[in-house]
Image (tube, rainbow, N blue to C red; front, side, top):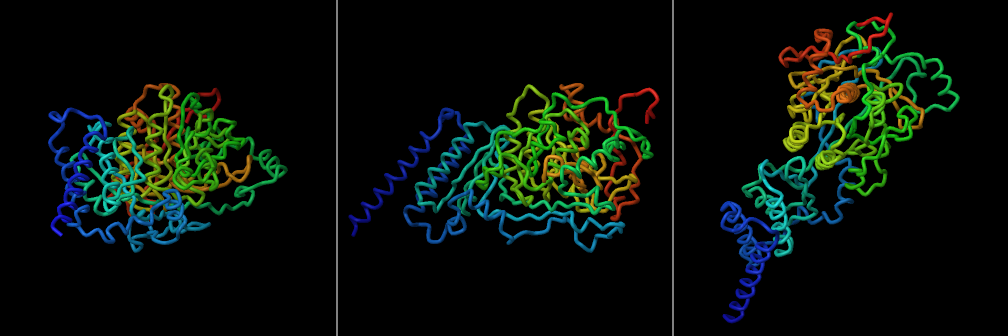
Length: 526
């Protein structure tokens, strides 16, 4: 018996020694003498844990049950997003705090929140800002080796790194591996991946002709003929100080030469109002997460509507901008924080020769991971990000990305310069823009339009404004763009008392988006 025990111990000693050797050879790194002692200690800790499992000193039975079901990662994400289980309303405030405002058509605030749920077993890990690629690579390799050495009692797989919006990775981790990852000296944040379900909605309009999801060619031609000379009210409002509209929208730019990345449900590339300026980003985040094959096309409608407000010929603020569809939400408006982070990482690497704007008509309760990725995108790469303030009728500082501190965050107004009950407010809102009863594109056909409401519609108005400013001066920084937007904004035009929830304690700024116009002889200059 003694000889058998000795033989077992020798085999264990050899296997652990081989593990240590594999760690040392895993990834080229600084010389051992100059490598931080804290990193060496962490690798020694991992080695001890591997030894504990292999020697039987730690009971391994059932230890990885919480991730054992995650085999095909695309199927797992697809099933998680499609499942109706586990979703929690992301209102951010108790329902008893809501005081509904009555509208003639309907009160929208009950429809305008989102839902979210944790994606079990999936984590997003962020390293300290000054961490090198070598530190990231070596850490990932050590985790992979530990997984292989313990029969997945320590489990880290389906690992995907990101390097351009901070250093980190997304991975399937069991509880024991989470503990080891958290103890790494370079790890500053580890959060479960979260599924997002944006609850988009249409608006009931008084005329059926103005609210359709699809028209026949004859109906389209007829309606376009009767409405072709009209400027949509929301655009008309942007380039004048008074809310008494003059029937004109003549901005002093078109956004030509600027790339806008719309992280949303996709875009109908062939819509006539986009004039061929909408393009595939090259990566479909949802395709990669779930195995779908839409290549950025819109099967929901929300993303196309947003794209039309940014840059449509008829309905757009910046009418010659180039639009890239970054599909981060599926056909039901569902996605994952990890997918949005990956989108940011890819956008950061895209064509540095042209100015960029990212439009984010999506949200979630405050996420340190999402906010960190945005900060790195904006501060490290100089890319302007515009975000919807949220549709919970609450304080925008309770939500991401509006709470990140680096986006231009946008609340919604209506045609009377009042704030609808659904719009978030507070000090995290930088500007307000039209966001109720906004006509723009439908994804149902190449000449269809629809009306929608929400801060999702207000956000792309500001995105278009940013594109116009970058067309005129591509070197402007995100801070300079924000200051320009605040400087241009019409002050004290908004009726903040119209808010259905008392916002006086939220320090809401009274600033309405203003797009400088080309002065035309005989036209009202304001």
